[in-house]
Length: 283
Image 1 (cartoon, one colour):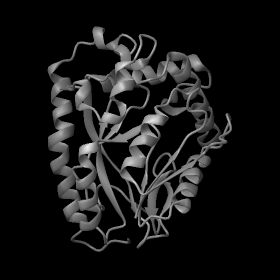
Image 2: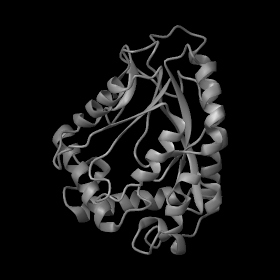
Image 3: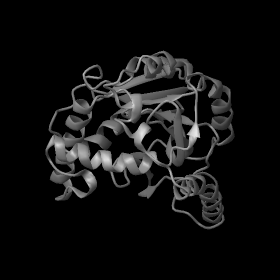
């Protein structure tokens, strides 16, 4: 049995693609669990991991997938996913590559996220690790791409695609304030105001969008999200990334960096994974 859990609060107000995502999860999973419905506006940063932990514990499947509400699988990958769950049945978790989407016509592929969790054999997995205190750990060891197998089943992350500047600014400021309360600094999150937090986010996005060199058509996206992508208007980030799509000039360095992330980085990660799995581990 496969469970998918997700978390959201006021998804219409926050302009999340929640209906499309839930439709996808119902297509893939035997059980869909939702948590986080009563999230407070000013929250403690530890609440993120605690909410995810609640979702994991409420899920009754042998395998549990932690999905952000802006994350969707492609319908063509269902059988492949089931095949890999069976193949790696003795591992605590599985990594999958993220298609990062800002505008629907491009994507970047770099991160491999560990969010497919083997609850049947490793029920003591915790969602309390990593920089954001919400990545999976087992016996105090972070589960990541270096100690868990990676599978070629991509997940598509739409993050801020459907959001307006106002929604993004409000959200980023809330998280910046929560970060400050936990860690005593704003770091790369800008500051407590909407303007500061948005500008910091947009600077980060500008750098990342340079690496979006791989092209897409709407029909390449998962079927669950295509209609909504076709309806994006000029107030939403996905329309033209608030002007970046038309203004940004990608350099040779940008193309090299993106290709390096996808191919050379993949080889390095494979070598590290194989090295880790030929030595003693604490898992």
